[in-house]
Length: 414
Image (cartoon, rainbow, N blue to C red; front, top):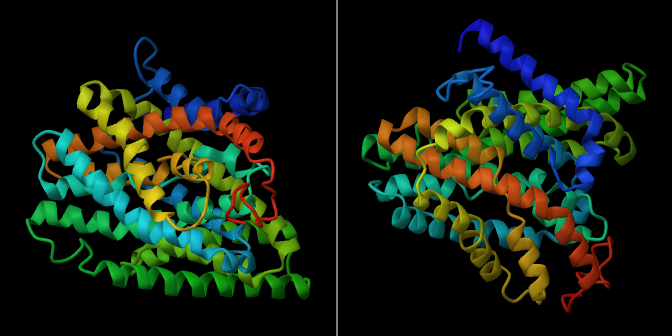
């Protein structure tokens, strides 16, 4: 992408953002989410008859923007988690992560190998792993709906934050195996467990130290609230980039840093100071969705019924069956299990993994992987974005005993 075209893309993306800001509330009432708007805008502006901008799928800048956006969003999401409350109901998120996620990856791998022609089991595993992580932002109406028990929303939020990072080293692992014909190491030379530990350890230290420094600066009058807000946003990027530089898991680092920051700063001041980070994450996410829109037609123009079938199954069978199995014995009713199973939207992480696979794999495998992932993400943007608010209202009607205290789910789980 030339310098001129890059400026045009930036101008078009931020013009879309400005226009969306004028009508966002009205669009929200019609269940038209921000990702839907930005993907549609990118699709229209980059393709005939307008064709005003051009973005290359192999552009390193696109992938880097997507990675930074995901890191900031993960930090922001984690910083809203109340660690004390999380300790009370960690079992639900733990089931989704420790049982549901591996089963989703395994089932997704089998479905990919069955439907996507001409790819090996290892490349199928790349697809299965890449579409496993969820993106709570695509179901924002659910995450902000106080008629949905906070216990369920926290579980979805924590799952969304951690499964991106957990999946990252395994995507790298399968990519290395696909390229080298062996599964001895990831492309960093580290075992996935080492990458996770680096992310957890360094991310936790940075987040905790950052929270302590913010508290000290506030107490001694060394800084203003606006400047601390900027500092928190910077902390999210530092946590990600520093851990990546030492070949650790940057996405886990960003999320754990957010958790540590939340735990080490006061609730009242923490809300004010992380507000800017949330806004930065929102802007960067909008840019990524716009870029995705500019690329998606070129990626999917040769898609077949197999890609569509994979996308449908990835969002239904591949997600909902593992979630249901992971929740056996919890006494959650069918409606609650169905809600948790359906709201596993695929978003920024899957886009990042798709771009990484396209850059890494041989041409045929790379195209097959990016096509399957793009079809899944596009379908998720539309279906999960449009269904979040209506299904949230329906859940509230059918589960009137549910409250926002996290003490119940409108069922016998108590």
